[in-house]
Image 1: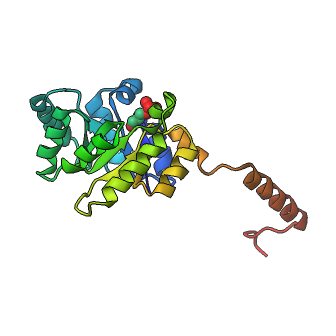
Image 2: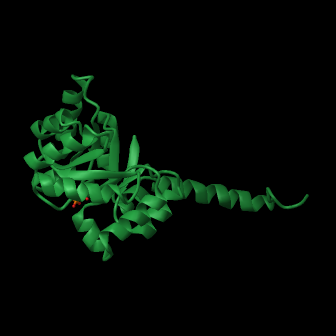
Image 3: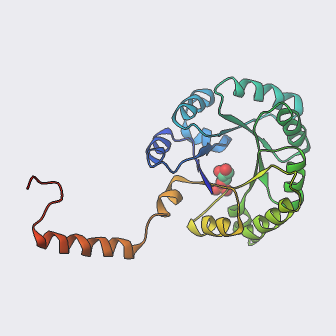
Length: 221
Ligand code: G3P
């Protein structure tokens, strides 16, 4: 499973990229606004930190506008993936860009039917928002299961399931059990994945017992 970081906070991206666990980044207009920085500047910096795909979302809602914005965004770096909303203009843009070899991430997906259209449009990634479905008492993970089942019926589909709107580690584990290709994680959730109280307790016990030996692995003998 690939892990993308879902943020435009470059300091967070740098810190997490140093762990070797970051395979890409996703941003959206809200995350860019939260960064307080100019979009093209922060996008260029993110693309310089991470080698993998960096999703940059268009803000136009019409095909011509989306294509014009995509062209500008693609000038920033070679690892920019264009993010478009799951609308008919977004799907038309996805088809046009993907047919020219551009990676497209189709976002704001909330149904299997939408995911089917994105795959037919040649999307590199589909972004189903599991957290926002859970937030309204629908089952976000059921959508991931449905999309996995549909995509597996058609070997010609190359779209990767990029689980988004993740709220906690269980979303990640459940997505991995289903066989989603990518999870895009808020920085805090990525950090949470490694944590367990019994690991902390066990390590403390090991170190306490080791200290009693008075030994040092690296000290000169
Ligand atoms: O990548 C999409 C993600 O940022 C949406 O998450 O928490 O706003 O539902 P959220």
